[in-house]
Image (tube, rainbow, N blue to C red; front, side, top):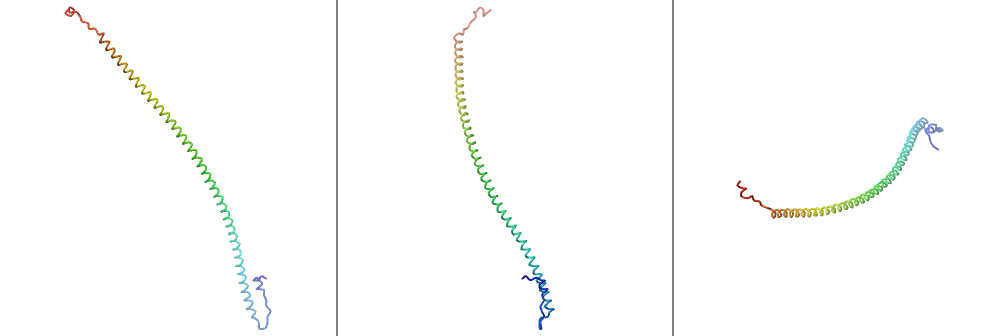
Length: 166
């Protein structure tokens, strides 16, 4: 049986000879009823408070669970992003290596062509120098031959004396 403040206030005891003073008993019962009412009010308030904090605790636990799930998902996404970035980096490096090899190969081919062209130009220069020397030698012989011919065919003409005196 649950005892309420009203039960305490309505409680009546039969009077006996040599019993308690009814007024004191009623005052005491009134005091007990007030105290009981305060305690019951406090219990009710505390129960409401307990429910409130239980609800907050449950909300907090739900949020914590959601946060944990979110963190797990975020970690998975971060791992996927990292893995994708690493794959992309490997592809970029591979492409750069291929491009670098191609550039080196092209540069080597171009250097080989340039060296071949330089060799061709050197050969042409030697040929030109040789032709120029041969031309100079030929001209020198022509000039020498003309000088010899002129020396051999040179005629000195003198006027007779009589014509000189006149």
